[in-house]
Image 1 (cartoon, rainbow, N blue to C red):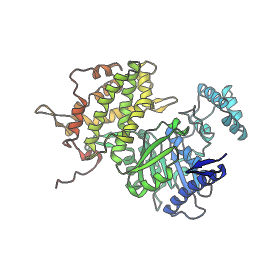
Image 2 (cartoon, rainbow, N blue to C red; image 1 turned 135 degrees about the horizontal axis):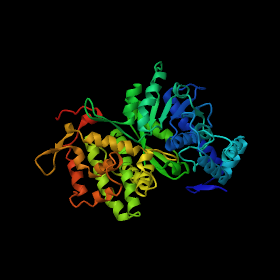
Image 3 (cartoon, rainbow, N blue to C red; image 1 turned 180 degrees about the horizontal axis):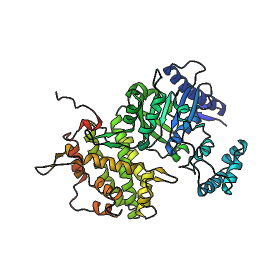
Length: 467
């Protein structure tokens, strides 16, 4: 057989050869840019092994891992976390349902331990099964085998590219430890953060802290070396070659070459300079996704109710980003698509739906078996506390008085009351949506776009004097 393009027939061997050359050329281009000598591979390390972190590293391993003299791909995760019996039994079913996975484990002499775990004769550990391509938070989607390192110093001390796959709640602590291992480095690595959460600081003045800021604070790495990757993606679907796109945000020095390096036929990566909007939206979408899941669960997936919720929550997101950035990118294109897919199918939406149906409860915490950290919960608390500060007061849009910004965000307020204060059941979110006094979402957007509420210090920025 042969493939045809522009009237010219190409053999499968030609296509394979030239697709490999293309991938290797991308790797060589990056190596030249980094000043890598022959025989000195580009060292890529994933820090954190949640679903998206594991998939991202697995895609890099699939693309570049076989160029062993030019690239080394590894992932760090903590050792010692046992796999419970029920998960081991389910994992055994997954293995036996996939002939390719079954054959691979048999070839690697790794199948027997899964039989023993299924019988209850052995305990498996999360780092152990990750080596065979199984992420504990995504058992149903086998990945390629990964090189797993459980010693953080060994993993990162000489890394050229570090992929942050940690939740925002763990980013500062882990990167503070990493900074100790980088003290003697002459150059800092490129750091790509996948984390989509935020933290709030209220003293000495209120401000939001994003994962890229946490990394910069902890390590002292140049801001231009720290990038954020966001996009409309579900980890398991991307690894199964569903078409997706993403934006790599940050300084142009590295976003352009790294976007080229990360790009694959089914995963298109664009470079973008608006780090603030994309990273803040990455945290906000998880906040509102929990509410979207509640609405879906409480209304039997009513399209009308979900669309009403979507209108209100996106207007609040736009309002909040205008507090943090003077000219934030519009909620359109990939930014809107990222919000849409997270509200539709992400783990935070799943969590909200399970809460609404009574299949989960808040006493279980925000780290859920088989799903990992539900980052939207801590982000609800962070944004609520930040926007409740009197020092951020703004003029009421209709009355001659000042109010704190949270008063203009009714959805965020009710999510805080449900998830953090636990004053109301999930049903309260429908009551909030049906409040007859609620303003048209358009009005909130118009208020935001006047720029009257911009607070540059919320991200540690200085407001430029007006010309």
